[in-house]
Image 1 (tube, rainbow, N blue to C red):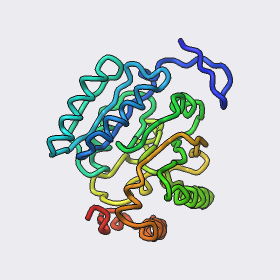
Image 2 (cartoon, rainbow, N blue to C red; image 1 turned 120 degrees about the horizontal axis):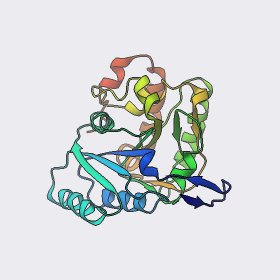
Image 3 (cartoon, rainbow, N blue to C red; image 1 turned 90 degrees about the vertical axis):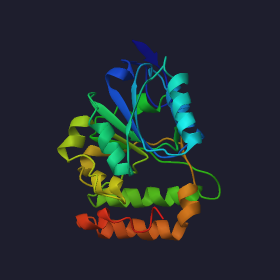
Image 4 (cartoon, rainbow, N blue to C red; image 1 turned 45 degrees about the vertical axis):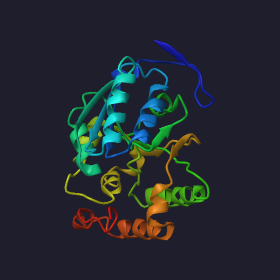
Length: 249
């Protein structure tokens, strides 16, 4: 049993995360980014032995080498398993089927947990689904602050939006709402998270979860906001989420 001291929680006892949490990461040709993601996980408090399931479909030599290297470098600190992936919804579903812990964290390969106590802090909250705010590279940081506003409004309206980059579910609650649908190719994270009741959802405030700005660089900020609003308007249309809408082009 280890004592945790942070600025946001008082002294407490926390059992090893390996007994509480499994982390599922979908991946395709992430290369060094995936390695850095795992490195940051390895620095989390009480993380030793925690199971990390990487649902991977990499097909380039460099990414496959980094996948081998991280399994070698972190084999004494983390319990890493690689399974067959696919599109993010398929990869997350494949990984979630192997989860036997009370909580499952869906984490994207380009999300870095730079606060070493973020996982233990999040697990203090008795919620079915927890997410966090993100920070990114300049000049795109303001975009996530606008997203925070959209996220707040959507929660008030009863359709919580937890980005798939960080979704910490109670495993039982995750399966109660059906789990990830492998047929969904777009906004599958919103399609799933909106099924959680607002009272059972929270955004844990922290400044130390970084993600890449590549989405904004690739698709453009206006397109991202447009498709986010369109996803909300189609929240009750299952067929909408089964189309890629050009996201993977």
